[in-house]
Image (tube, rainbow over all chains, first blue to last red; front, top):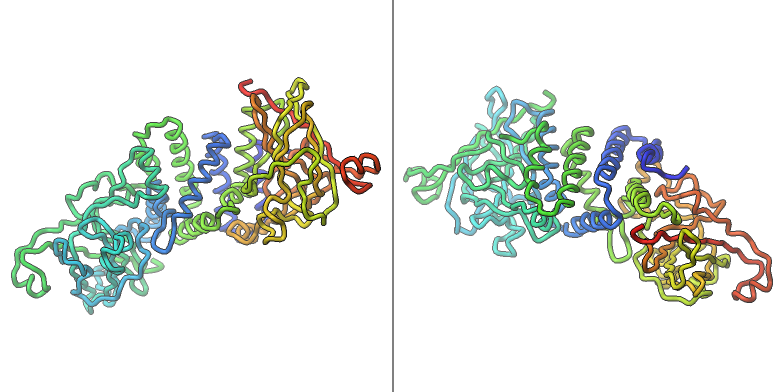
Length: 289
Length: 289
């Protein structure tokens, strides 16, 4: 029997009937149903479908060691944030809210000592970021690992700075002390546009969407026996907090990067006085809870 | 307000509200609804979504001048055939049935004279393919252009033969004569596997699907004032006619490649006797009808 619009889903699902892995089978069934549903709703012409294929191909071709355009596409379509939101509901109701990984976690963060600076340029406004890692009952988690990465005061990550920043700038991997505390020096990050020189940028221009993300610092915090959390700290008052291009803002993650006038603390941390400071206490859910 | 599963579609559609092109807006709205619907149904973990992103990235990275892995993915998911089927319903009910373009229309077919052979190897079973191009009322269409491409008797296209076939082998661009007739020499194509050395091949293996397509010759037939048709002629009796990996078989496109014992005709066409012959009369729909 010829392939038909009415029976297209059944015909394709039949071809996948022998898929041995039940989860893969389930994912493919969902994909076929929604892909065909999309096509039946939108009814692309062949020429439009070719444009779609070219768009997806260009996204893949734009990816390299330091650029992940498909994550960017997932991000601007709200897909990353939806997956992230569903995962968080499943895993960690009592923990610090998570948000998207984003496309810039492509360089291993250099191991740094507590108090070190993640910034080697010295051109931004110095700040101290400090906090603790604890279980929901308040038990501190010594030795928790805190991976951070951020844009600089011009809104660029190391990998997209064209060599202006050395690789690893704005990044650090810290180990919490015996009381589960961490602190490090950085600069106050700026809001920035997601990369717009690829197909995702073209999509944003064609749809008159702005490419900006509010200022933030990325965190992945993990410790043995706990569910890791991938999240951001957003800078209170930053532009675009209410229209993040990737939908990742959660109110519970916004922090005041307050100006502190404390000569003793400044001297102790090797910072000028006054300086900016943000506090971010992280709560991790015990694994299997 | 934080992003939530319940409001995810609305939040993302709001970001696209200013899209100036109404058709683009419509396509994106469908994409957002079905993408989020897929994610809500399947509920991928973050790790699964990363695998999905990696899969799509690998598809894009596999594409090059002679390889279009995203078309292949669209083909094995039945998406190409669904788009093709909807386009055909819209455009050309009285015309020759169309079917998928496939991923091998990546080399411009060499211009050839009527009667020429598209095969320069001489290792396959010689055949004559002949036919006519006409309107639905039977009016012949002189000067119609017939673009053909096919695999050889080993089931390989020129671009995937590793240099065994010169580029352009198995391909030809013909011009119908004053009576809308065309004829050319070739070899009987073999069934073949779609390329399995990329992510789509990995998908087929993981789902225990075979990669084979029944033997066929691709055609694009066009003439000024008519809707072009992209189609195949399938070889009657070929394996996989009932389980084409890309769902493209239509019964009306299957032809007997009959053995002909006709010394005079063989001599006239420069073929050995006996030889194989297939007849394919193409009907094009007038444009705008």
